[in-house]
Structures are given as structure tokens and as C-alpha cells.
Length: 332
Image (cartoon, rainbow, N blue to C red; front, side, top):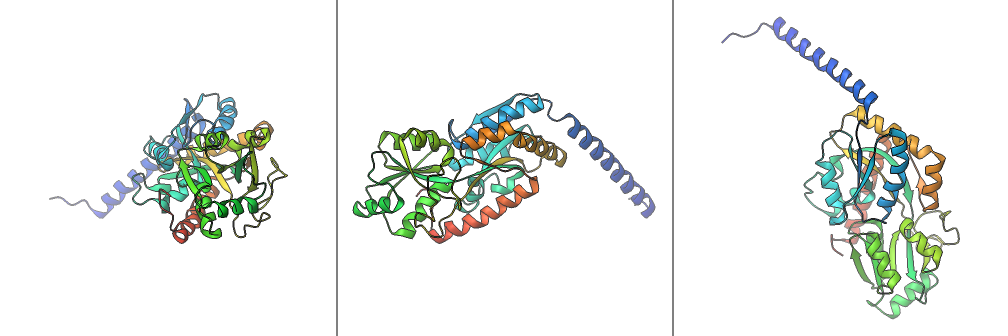
């Protein structure tokens, strides 16, 4: 067998490297200049009316205006977000199918084992869009006007006070499990597939309370059908400034902030991710977008895609510690 000389091997390797580099530069330039050239699909791991759906539809209308391409929101609730996560992780890594990523993406790394799509490692961050408080609300007929009164009611009726949370692994789900562990109260904790059925049950009175992201609950708080007892963030929410924080309500070391953003399949080329990041940041900086999101109880974020990747990793570590300490299982 003839063995190429070291010089010939070197020349062949150099030619291959130059070809790859030229294709990469040309492809990247074309991608950045031409993207997007067809509709973008935003996959929300929630039913219509849930906070990821609200975010996707609010941002989507302004993104559509900016990129001059249709932006389609597709709802894929259930499976603790894993249905939506797997669909996007296995989609073509071309930037046209994006996940409305929530903190559940990071939480699931510890809540589930052997996720077929690779968990949060199956995604590349595009941008953090918002952060938002969780809110503990009760039906307006419940005789509790503060967290302390709610806990007293739960202690007087152990296992009878029903609290709904949206989907396994949401911050509201983990916070409710942790609330029972920290305070010693025994609640009837019911986990639904998404925020909307959980809120609907609280509105009907079939459950007494719900722990959920502020946005989908806000209209019902404003109407008086639901009474907000506390928000989970360190500061009060401008959307409901009269509602105390969990710390102010007497729950120490019980501060949580949800986040949501947009992620792409992990193999998506960097030029496409950069183009998406620029488009989303421009939309999030638009005063119309900011006004619309703030009115719905969201705090607008934005930033680099690297910062969003860092947030997902930090959240996975933070919630992993909570899950292990509280021995929280996929179905609570």
C-alpha cells in the first residue's frame, strides 16, 4: 500500500482546512444576512393563556413586524414541559423552530433521569426575555387575607385546603412542596397540566388556592375573583404593588423568581443564534413590547445568549439543590 509523504499529507490537510473555513465563512455570512427567510415557529410548553403562551404571542407579534416573516405560536402543554422540549430539541437546528424556554427546562435536569433529548444540554440559549414573580392566590371566598391566615387555616384543616399548581416541575409546584416542608402544614397539593386549568379550578372554588406565575393570574386578581397573598420575588411587583413579598409575609428564605426566554436546538449555527439574539433584543427594547409585557406582570430582560446559557446552568444547580433537599419527585 502506498503511503502519502508527510508533505503531501500536510498539503491535503491544509486544502481541506481552507475549504472548510471558506465554506464556514460564506455560509455564516449568508445565514446572518438572509435569516429569516421563512416563518418562525415558537413552541410554548403551556396551553393557551399560560405565561409562556402570553410571552410568545406578545413578543411574536412584534418579531413578525421586525423580520417580515410569520411567527407562529404552537402550544405543546403536558409532560412537565418535556413534550415541547423534545419536539424542539429534535427539530432541524436552523433557527426556525424555537422553544419558549422556562425555568422548568433547568428544573427537569434534576427532576427526571435520562431525558431522551439531553435535558437543558440539548439547547442553545437565544435570549432571556423576562423574569416574573410567582404569586400565591386564593379564591375570593376563602377567609384568608394574608399568608399567616392562610397557614392558620391549613393547620386547622390538615389535608383539606387544596392548592393547585401548573405542571410538574414549575416553580409554583416546587414552591408549594417546599412551603409544606418548611411550615409543617399539610395541603391537598394538586398538579395540573398547565396554568389555565389550575387557575380555572381556583376560580370555580373547587380548589382554594393556586401558586402560579403572576401573568395568567393578574386579570383575575384585578377583577377581584382571586385574592393575592404574596409574590415570591425579593421586591414587590409593579403590577400589584399592594401585594407583599413572601419575605414580608413572614416566609424567610422563600424568594423565587421565574424566568422565560427563547432557546434553539443545541446544534444551531452561531451566526443564526447571533441573528436571532439581535432580533429578539431589538423587539424587547421596543417600548411597545416593554409596555405590553410589563402590564402583564413581567419584568423585561434581554441580553446576550451566553448570559442566558449561564442563567439556565445556574438555575439547574439551584433547583437541583431544592429538589434533593425536599426529596421532590416528578409527581408530588
